[in-house]
Image 1 (cartoon, rainbow, N blue to C red):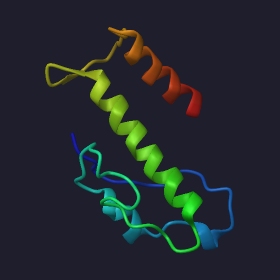
Image 2: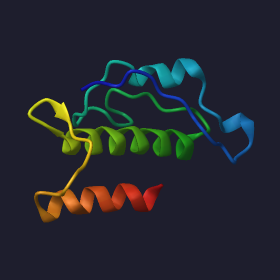
Image 3: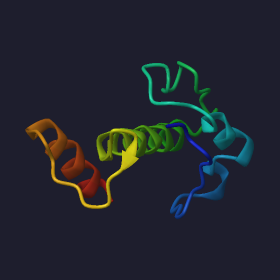
Image 4: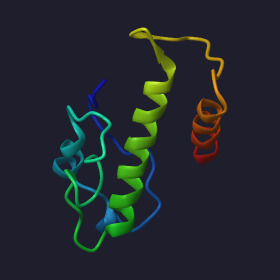
Length: 97
């Protein structure tokens, strides 16, 4: 799958560090790949490196979870990890929530 849109639900830093809508649009139509990272396909934000890293990491995490939950092209409603690695991805995502 690819990213349809990216929004920030909560931001607890000064608004000067808030990524702009045009910056967030870099993720639209992107798939999970090695290039979906800062200094890869994603440009940084001058003075807001931590915000840019956090958003990029969040998008990658959601894309990874989406890949794990899709089986045979279908999104599974109830998920049972098929391997220890899958369980770690889901546990990591839940911990980051």
